[in-house]
Image (cartoon, rainbow, N blue to C red):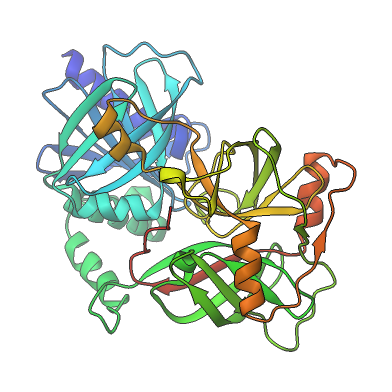
Length: 415
């Protein structure tokens, strides 16, 4: 009885993330051991989300939700959990022993952690057979049989309820496979035969002529136009001028009709271990804020993995989408190009410990060599008086750019 009660409560309570005070289910989702349906907001009566859940022998119940705004969530529930309201946890997941991601979950009730699932994680979750989830010292395995059909059914559920209303809710499993097949046809494979997906990163303008720096892995595999967006402005098509896969740098060019009064200046003095830094970028674009995000930390080391002197190690938190973004000192000068984070799960497998806040940026010496070789008229500057983080972010807004394209699976950043 407790299991059935918890499953029902979990499907309802996932609405705390994807739709508050949920009531339902309306209609049904029945795939393998997964059950669920559509839910309404109990306060307004409006459609909130669709969700499905299944129990596992390890005592954990998985809950997958998809709301009316197009956000996916994954929740871990168990009667043995005792979380405080609002408590958060990082959950590292590995799919089929290969693809990995870090989810950031919050406890909206004592026995459940709920995390937003980025689109790339949803796709991997849908096609995988096994998921290993690690949080702290807890490691759990989840058989993902039928998850492909569940994701399709939940997507079908949201589409149908938004079109027809809750009063016409039915079996959302019917027609789900057909809709999934149509969606797959709308995303044709690239010339290499690999599926084409939306991908994004960050870049920043380094000259009045519209030269833009980003990571090579941000544009690697792009099919068709590469677009750049300054916050609140229309997108522009960018041209690739040059790239350096070894140092993970790429240079893009804005249209000739575009001029920039504001652009980044590169610090002309070496930075030191312990100096404060600020990273700006567009992580998880489309799922989090449409504006850029700002994180702070320090320079932890003047070298990267295996003493690689091309990189800085930084503690400023970064996520997928930060790649190619600017790293600033306290005076607002560029001291690096954000490029990646340590492969936490690989390190955990080797050492038994999950590293935290170990991220990397390309040093300005490497950046300047790259720009010199591309004959870019960039500017350098000596550190001036310190600025507040809000002022650094405000000054960076006119030249920090979202970079996006349709492309094959993103390449790994060099570390």
